[in-house]
Amino acid sequence: MADSSGRGAGKPPAVGPSTARGARSKGRTQDGSGLDKGNLQSTLLEGHDTALSDLDLSAIHDKSVVRKTPQLKKKSKKAELSSSSAVSEKSPDLLQAMEMMESQTLLLTLLTVKMENGLSAFEEQAEKNLEILCKEKEKLQKKAYELKRRLLLCQKKKELEDFLDVQIEMLSPLEAVASRFREQYKTFAIALDTTRHELPVKSVHLDGDRQLFLDELQQELKTTRHLLGELGIGSSEDNAKAFNVLRELREVIQKKDLELRRSVDQVLELSAEASKEAALINQDVWEEAQGPEALSRWYFNPKEATDGETQEEIRSPLGHDEL
Image (tube, one colour):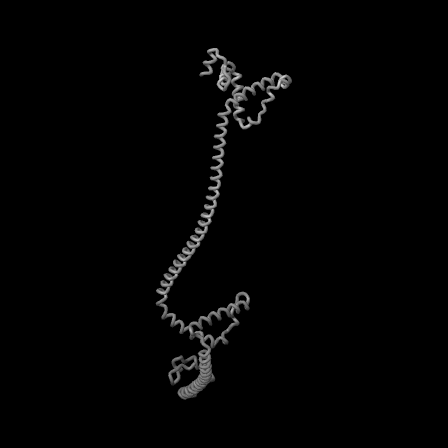
């Protein structure tokens, strides 16, 4: 406002930043194109304020250079000169701003370094804590698996105990039957062991290989022998004694059988002789009762004897029909 009032009063313009700013404002109000160019130039210079110290403005006042350059270069150099003068006028503010920016940049750099150091330390601590947590997690998982396994084993054991209790309850009435079956099976095993060499094997049909069947049978016999040994059945001494007794008994039975057969044959012979004698005696009595005439008809003329007589008239004295 002071600069504009001075120009309106006809005072000569004073040299300083206020006059430069007034000139720029006047140029902007009179020529729009000049406003755009000034804005672009000042913006370009302010954006690249770090390169101001490298500018060499001594060549601008060189007359030889001005004479040799074309008119366009002169205009551009004049614009650069005006802008550089404006920048030089603003240099205290720019330096202060630059110092502030540098201090802020330094503070930001320090804060960044501190944050990075703190972040690295925090990352290391976090990694250590994570490793500790992973180890603790593995321990807890192992412990949980072990507890789960024990729980499953306890449940399985409990189920087996319940199942065994049910089996014992169901099989307890069969204990007496099992003892009786043991005795019967012992007797059967002794008899089978005694007579196994006399069992017929010719008519036995074997499916598949005979040697394989014999091997399987041998394995089953071993299992049976083991089970009999657990039950206390089939000891060698008892089997030997029983075998001797059974052999003696068989010899006695064979002798008695032979004697019985002889006695039966003799009885049959005696019975046949007695029947023959009885028949002869009966025939003699009957012949005496009938007389010689009847005998002559029967023996010499059997047709005549049978024509006039019936079956009832021809009877023996003993009351039997004579055939």
